[in-house]
Image 1 (cartoon, rainbow, N blue to C red):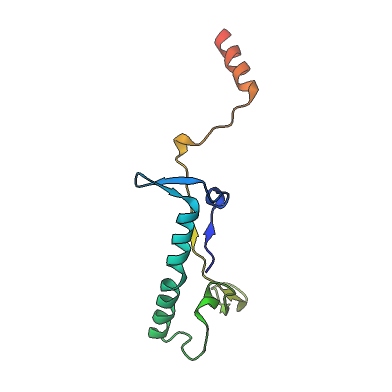
Image 2: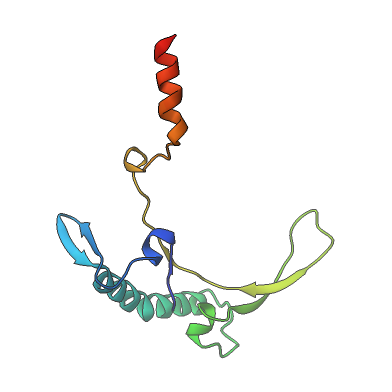
Amino acid sequence: MPLNYNRYLETLNEDDVLEIFNQLVKSKDLKFALEDSFEEPIQQKLIDHLKYREIGNKMKIKRDVWFNEGVDCKMLKAGTNGWQKGKLKIKVSVEFIPDESETPVYQSPLDEIYREIQGLQ
């Protein structure tokens, strides 16, 4: 199952490092651990739960279909003109969200001139 990484994690090279719980971790090791842990257990748990709920248990659907191609689905929403055909696909995403206080703020070279002008008045 391919994981989706946000733009911060997607651009990491294999040797880039993250600090998690005061421990340094290479990005390639973290990505491997995430991808390996989400590969089988979550897919099997989903299939087992769907079978328990008797959803799709009459069809022989491979478990990775939910995460790769998706399964055929129709959706009926109140207030619409009927069924909408499509696919139901499960995606798991991993995100890094920088603290706002540490996010670099873009400053124009004109900002300094503006501050100087304000100081003269």
